[in-house]
Image 1 (cartoon, rainbow, N blue to C red):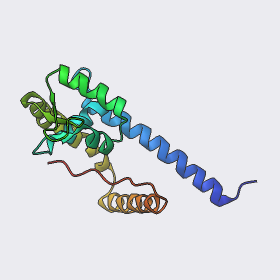
Image 2 (tube, rainbow, N blue to C red; image 1 turned 135 degrees about the horizontal axis):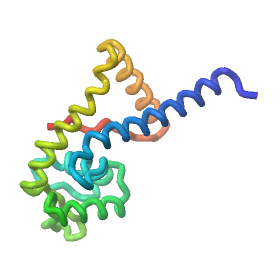
Image 3 (tube, rainbow, N blue to C red; image 1 turned 120 degrees about the vertical axis):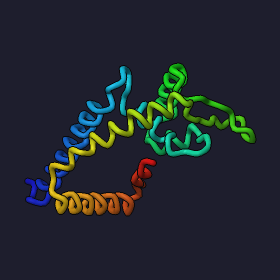
Image 4 (cartoon, helix red, strand yellow; image 1 turned 45 degrees about the vertical axis):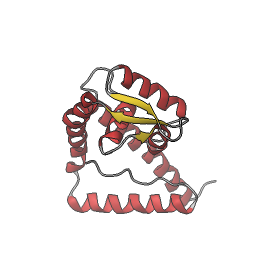
Length: 159
């Protein structure tokens, strides 16, 4: 028989799962303005947007929590559409560097950034106090994950 603490923990896990799924659907509904745009593709483009220099494909994939195979598939499609370009690292030919093309930079800054800001307005429905408290509590969850060896840093703020 489970105790009240176990039941509450189970409810929290299910609520986090539902919120995670719901937020992905919400964001997908906002970034999907361009045919074929997915959260993964938008994440790669936005991840490159804040970079002044080309970024290692593996480093960006790690930051986006994508497997090397998934990253390769995403980048291949984005490259085919002329949104990113790949180049070999000048000192280590095993490393692939990624950068936005002018078309990719325009798409990310003119469509994806505004879509992300619009998606974030979902939180406007909470009071400022509740938003601050939610942020504090999520920070605590992240801290406890870190204590248990799960490193999940917050992504950098958009440019």
